Amino acid sequence: MRIVAPSILSADFGNLERDIKMVDRSAAEWVHIDVMDGLFVPNISFGFPVMKPVRKATTKVLDVHLMIVEPEKYVKRFVEAGADYVTFHHEACADPRATIAEIKAAGAKAGVSIKPATSAEEIFDYLAELDMVLVMSVEPGFGGQSFMPDSLDKVRALRKEIDEKEYDCLIEIDGGISAKNAREVFDAGVDVVVAGSSVFGTENPEEAIVNILNA
Ligand code: DX5
Ligand code: ZN
Image (cartoon, rainbow, N blue to C red; front, side, top):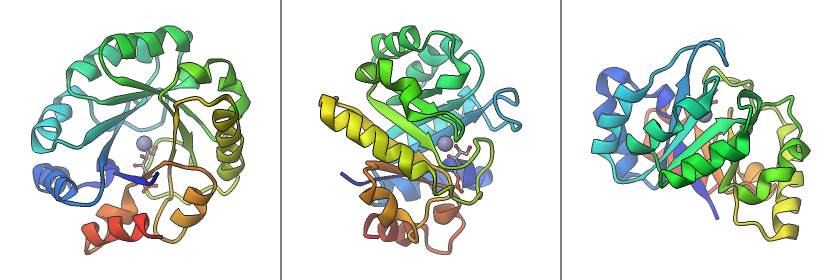
């Protein structure tokens, strides 16, 4: 499976509807939405008010990536705001199992993300409960950073565990992905790639999406 999730962190917020409609017409099946609180990461992006116009402008899968502390306090509201997937950080959550259950009870799919310093094995004990694992291939907080190649070992370890145990769990990767490295990333076992600057930072974003899918 190959899915591209353009990250609206790199979109033009003065023309957000235009940019979302571009994704809606494109070969991308998902839209990636980065929520940052200035505590879990050293940057602040946006929150609930941005969900509404995005949900209105597209029928694509809304993939919300929460880079916030105490995500359990907010997951339900993100589902109510239209999220199809809600992903929170393992490092930010005291009780991942309860938070996963809460996302599912609210009617969305549940994901957990791990930062570059967190090993894949740290989430193995609750991997069975997840719909998705998001491997960060940069330090979370900013778009436009360089891809960290070590993240592929983590992807391979997760792929092996998911396949051996026959879990129904997608692997997503986020940070520094473009048509140049997408093939390597998909070959390592990734299902969904997030792409921010390599889509919205180009002259022809729709073509950039196709190039990632066909890499
Ligand atoms: C970074 C965010 C990413 C970011 C990716 O913390 O989670 O989703 O938008 O941007 P690029 O694709 O430019 O690395
Ligand atoms: Zn992200």
